[in-house]
Each structure stands twice: as C-alpha cells, then as structure tokens.
Length: 107
Image (cartoon, rainbow, N blue to C red):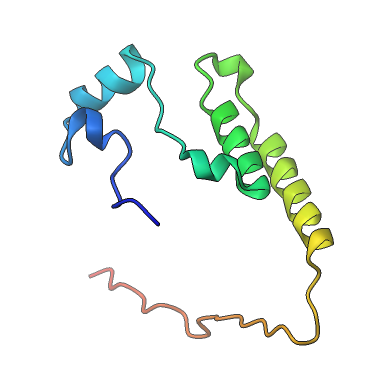
C-alpha cells in the first residue's frame, strides 16, 4: 500500500511554500525530506537512501563528491545485476526518440 504522494516538506510548509518558508525549514532548521521506512528495508533502495543522506550532510566538506556517488550507483548496479542476471525469457524494451526535437525559431 502506498501513501498519497506529498511534496518534500509539504507537511511543514504546505503545497505552495515561499522561498523564505523553504529557507527556514532547510537552512535554519536543517531538516531533510523524510525517507520512508519501507525503502530502508529494500537492499538496493537502502543503499541509495544512504547515499542520498550523505549528499545532504550539513557540512559541505563531508558531502559525497559526484564521482563517489557515480561509483556507488555503479556498485549497486553491479550487485543487483549479479543477483538477478537477465534470462532469455526476459524482454528488454528500449524506447528512443529517433527524431530530434523541432528547432526554435530565432526570429
């Protein structure tokens, strides 16, 4: 069962917060969006949640670098690929947009 979707910080500042409202919650109160308990029980999501939380560290020097985040995601991908490798019965669909988007007029 899923809860009704709510925006991050919606409980604290409502659906249409001002910049000042968000600054109060994030900068001054140092709050971060809530992570659902059931996400932490899933092995792959738990690792992603841990990585996200480390990116939110209040100390800028303690935050993960983009390279570290990339490496962690690659490790998670390798780990999940090793657990459930694709079988010949699995169909993989790749959707691509072969036509470039229309160019905007500069006039």
